[in-house]
Image (cartoon, one colour):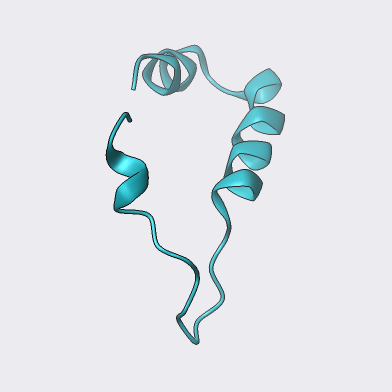
Length: 45
C-alpha cells in the first residue's frame, strides 16, 4: 500500500462513493461473522 496513497484522489464524482475510512469500518465490523476463508484472504491481502 506504500505509494498507493498518491493514486487516491479526493471525491470529485457525482456518484456517491464510500470513503476508505467507512470501508474499513464496514470490513472491521464484518469480521466476527466472516467465514474463515474470507478472513484469511482479507488479512493476507
